[in-house]
Image (cartoon, rainbow, N blue to C red; front, side, top):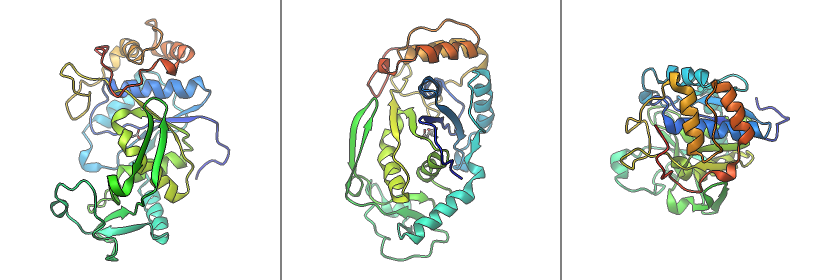
Length: 294
Ligand code: GLU
């Protein structure tokens, strides 16, 4: 159930337990936290764990341990998407009634390297059981004005085609879960890494099909490793050490080009970070080029 009276700012941090949290995740957590709390908003945490085969053992525990060690004040309960599969199925049912989705039997091999889905199964009226589910897109341009990355526009029929909401193996896709939960949690502002920028039009489209209100977006520049690659779970970015929380907070705050933080307890440092927070200081770039991470 969605609350009817929403506070003006509701933000969130939504890590996937596909690897331990790293310095890039901390930048996202800190920025989304300070944006929300400096505007007297709420900050929710959601664990995006629908993609069971990609879950990395121990990473969920590491996320919770870090949230605790960094002393973030989380509003409400932490939400776990794997406990909400019925909700996503209900939304798929709603979309089916709207004739907005269809079953697709195309295999990865059949699709080959085509980045744009040609709509092969759109008119086949296949049974939904054991097939991938795709949502239909149309050719209206989808715009959004990102607080850091400027205006973006995409025509989904040209750039992507109908996209998958549920995989053939039954896994609910990130695009569906994120849109439904942002709506049900009353999220108003999404602050996340710029690596997710090109998911945004899909999410706006899906939200529009479902009649959800449009969100505000801020995509943060990504921290890079010494080889110029973005820090990610895939390239084995170093896991955050909860025992180093004060130092890591100081570094993440510096990466976001904020006024310096004095070393103290994490709770007091976060308080100072909120008081000093000025999002106009964050570089309007896709990557952080200065070597500010540990
Ligand atoms: N779960 C996604 C990740 O860990 C982030 C989703 C989002 O912020 O929209 O990359």
